[in-house]
Length: 113
Image (cartoon, rainbow, N blue to C red; front, side, top):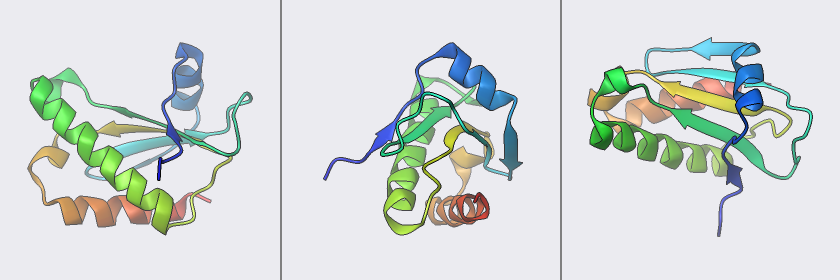
C-alpha cells in the first residue's frame, strides 16, 4: 500500500510553517500549521537535516529513519490531516537507538491535536 505522505515543495509553504507553532525535543523540532491550498486526503510533511550534522550519507540515514517513523505513525496514530508538518532533525538522532527516537516522536505527534 502506497503511503499518502507528500513533501512540501514551495518556498512560501516552508516560510509559513516556520512562523507557525512548534514542538521540540532532543531529537527533532516539529513545526506544524495549516496551509491554505492543502489536500485533506494527504499528509504534507517534509524532513530537513542541516549540513552541520554530517556528510550526505549521515543526513540521508536520518531522513530514511524519519520517513520510516512517519509511515508507522501515519498507520498507528491518529494524526491531524488539517496540519502540514516540517521536521528538522537534530544531531542526536544519528547516534541514538531507533526505538527511543520512534517512541519520542510518536508522543510528540500525539500532543498535536
